[in-house]
Image (tube, rainbow, N blue to C red):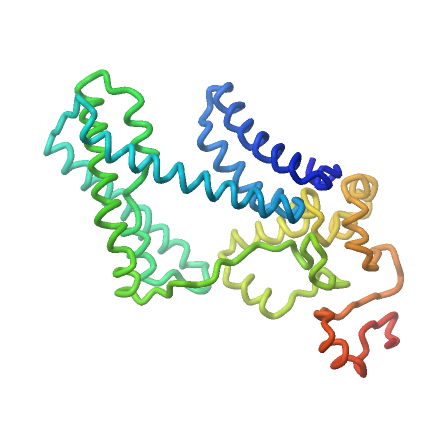
Amino acid sequence: MTKFTRVRDFPLLESALFVLMSYSTFLIAEASELTGVVAVLFCGICQAHYTYNNLSDDTRVRTKQMFELLNFLAENFIFSYIGVSMFTFPKHHFDPLFILTGFTCAAIGRAANIYPLSFLLNLGRKPKIPANFQHMLFFAGLRGAMSFALAIRNTMSEARQAMLTTTSLIVIITVIIQGGATMNLLQWFQIPVGIDEETEALSHQGHNGNTTPRGDWNEISEPDLTRLNEKAFLARIWGSFDTRYMKPLLTHSRPTLLETLPVCCNPIARLLTTTEQMTQEGQNKPNRDSDSDLCIEENDFTNSDLRASSHRPIHSISGHQV
């Protein structure tokens, strides 16, 4: 919908549809007796990776700020509710042995996930996950409002009441102790903090055409190649598949499916490729069926760059500089 329609011309409607269709994911899962929370999780992953790139600038700003506000309110509400429930819930059942066992099993379970999986990943990963990162991953876990929400759904029996009490204590203690000590531990482990947030961009060109397109999508710049080689093997496979097929299918990203799919699939590729994808804000794009080899240098066309590049060839067509 966000790719093949002009809904972006109506930012308010676009924002409303974005929110309503996100919520419909939860409703469909619940109506199907599946887990709505997991459905919303994967919906958010796909929207952040694909749908966000198709939105208009106004809708991007509006939806991002709105969801940040909702996230802030919901997070504060659930943790406040956990704290209040410890004093207001009338049927708490404290079982010291069960509480201690819960803490111990949670820590063992997290350690059994972090360290063996990190070891297996490091066998084929460059750079490796260092030990201090693994320790921080272990320390950063064990707290979660989701477990509390599940535990409080049914408190009819003493066993379920003990489960709620133990879960609430684990969440509260880990939030206060582990959450409060996070910055100190990051400094102790010498893990850099305050890194600027990275934003995902469309391959080779953003939606608004802020970057000059590349003629050959197989040409990868040195920083891009370095980041690609730093990924794990499976991540590199998925990244390549995502760049060649998924993003061109679901967004206005280059290369288009006309460039990545086999020639026999050209009719389908043309159907799934938009005019904006081909023109990229009016820039001339290479045609896979063309005999000419058109390459465009990547420059930021500011005034200073134009002056600096006045004596430098910008286009190369069939080997001849212009």
